[in-house]
Length: 291
Length: 246
Image (cartoon, rainbow over all chains, first blue to last red; front, side):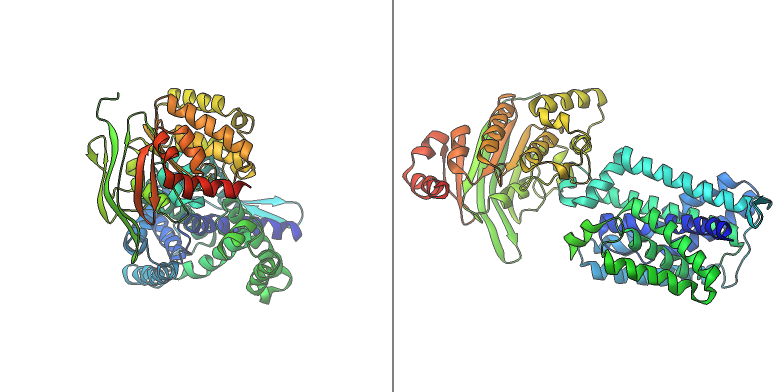
């Protein structure tokens, strides 16, 4: 029972972490919460659904194309809703993000429909027994492995690549990054592309796991992932990964033992963390700097 | 390749923040290989002048010419590409990134791996402490070490013109002396310098020429020797230094 909850929690948490990375990366560079990110994730799930339909049971091509399409959607969202507001107060940009969130989810309802759609199978389900009472299936393994691989790749990108370093530099100090020759427009586009493509991957994984894709799926997942990002310390990439895992695990155990309070307990954990570590578990510095 | 007539030329530049004119019709030049200082009190508009030259702020009037090309109002990343590097006030190292990564950021626009590596070696030779600490986050360095890193980072861009904003700020006197020695050394390698400095005596003792700024205007210009002998400079800027040091 405990092992089973831990497995489910880690799996769910790794998906939260993928989505949370999109919130935290954008916050790091632009210092606002991109509330449209949950809906970008939802669109990722729809892209994946169509791609899986046309490409059949080929997981990797579906994943890669989903990530590219969702990444492009994220960049477009930035161009339309945030770029014209680059010098506006952050509250204005955040409001624009809320508006964009509504536009994206309504667009999905308009263009695709408000029903819950099944995700075409990319592979057949096999259960594996882990001890007497714990079961893991191949979809869960695939979700977990994909999430971990993507996070390892992201880590490499952020720490080793030229643009990854530019993103970190710009997160710390935009003005000085500009003096180094970093073009902020490019950094912002790359940040939105990468963050959104991870959200798209999460859309595919969640759609596969629950076999359900619907136009409002971005709301709850977005809120949870946002919580995970806050939990880890918004702006911190390892924080988002850790916060996602923690939230997934706490939520699953809460669901198992106090089933009615599952979401309440997840948010209670966030409130407690923020009371004692206002900058999140990974980042006390931001709190000092920004309040 | 450097030719005759290469220079940084600022003409009648105006910088405003809202209704406040921080810089009023400032004109100055930095010739090839020159070491020019801009001295003056706090709030005289020195930093605003530097920031407008390197594109952090855009001037609301006048022109900035670089080797004959008008670069007025271009964004900072475009001006950085013209080999104008800046050591900003307060050092502004990327605190969460390692020393090595900070240097890499200085070379952000360059793709010539081999020569980037050579330049990194040169920076390490100039500031050996940076080599010792290359894996450390820049935020863990002392103030003086961070200043060295900020200078090293700017050098990684292979600048033709290096702008330095208050490199002595907040540093112990011994550290200031050692940093200034290095700055002179950098100038001897052929890099043109424009340095903003509150410590007028120190600045004039190392530079070729100087400008004195007050309330957004240049009130005096001349060779470093001339300015050191000038009565007003002696009274207002050098006298003030003595009072401060006692």
